[in-house]
Length: 450
Image (cartoon, rainbow, N blue to C red; front, side, top):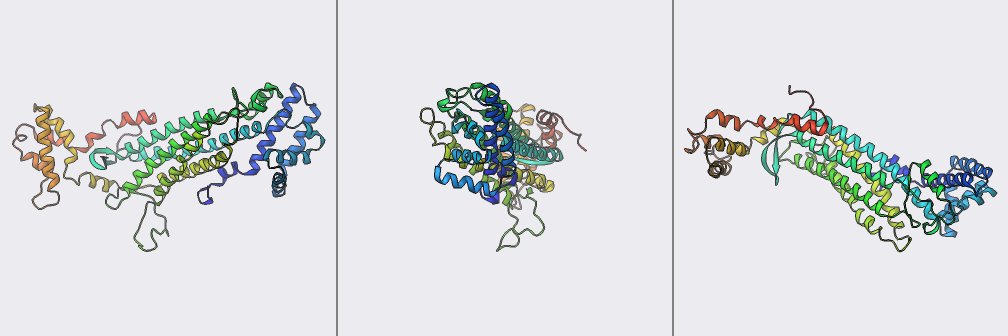
């Protein structure tokens, strides 16, 4: 991911320094386990740990350059690291990597990195949830128009709209927790995964120390269905980001103007048009969501490796693992900030709600006519006729509101009391179940309406 969309803490997880620290930790733990279960002298394991820890603590650019220099000759990254480590440890290095294969280190390390990245993503999701909850309760009773097919439908609450997005991100958090558990897997099983040269207890020891679970059958590599499921989860989260971003983009349209991204002092919207206030954050989030979702197909195609292993997945994961987690981390942080500072215009929402002359109350009027004894089919015909008469004459001198057309309709006048129509056209009636919905989503209804 380019630096523009990279936050340092997430980038550090994928930096070579962190990768090599994890590689050493895997090797040192395996060495310690072998000392415990036989095969490595305890003193050798102690030396490996002490000298290796010292080398990693002093790790610098010179060490990176040395590893790269070795790899340029060996054309093998793990061997290059092990050679560098042997230079630091000395003769006891002969006990490092005993019975192990490169994938034991690479795949277990990737699991650790993905767990580290996931913990950061979970914190990001918590920030999004916190912002959405606060704004949902703030606007619990803020009337706005609900839209279907982008057309005015019926009144709703802006807080309820936000509660719906909160519920989606809460589900996404649960999905990510499950994905974390599935990806937190360790493999120290040796060539083709038979444990022929390494005691299975070594794998269990290393897994426990790293907070992982041993892979059932590693076949030399951890099966990539786990990774595919992980990236599918990231993609679902990205789609939730885009759904909320699109809502903000629509609400900020000049014709709508119900909400907009915070416009910072000194911010410029256009190099040519000084008046512009563009939804740049939500548009950016839409683009980032596309990038995160784009990693799903390569991850799925990585599942089908040849026999016990090949490395066709390696080049893919060197790209999608950092880019996917870095991109989603940035997007979630941006979304949390955007929603925290979102500027909401309740008066404009109310004006838009009533801008069609009251026809958005047609559904409740339909029910009122039916309750008054009019057959539903007849009631629908009556309500639609008056709604269309209102809609088609909006803004014209002789245009009438929906209520005026209903009052003038002989099939309504005298059959439905005025107070019944008043109640049917009261937008507050659509807020009656908010406590139920909020309690279901947040576990609490919040303060009563002021």
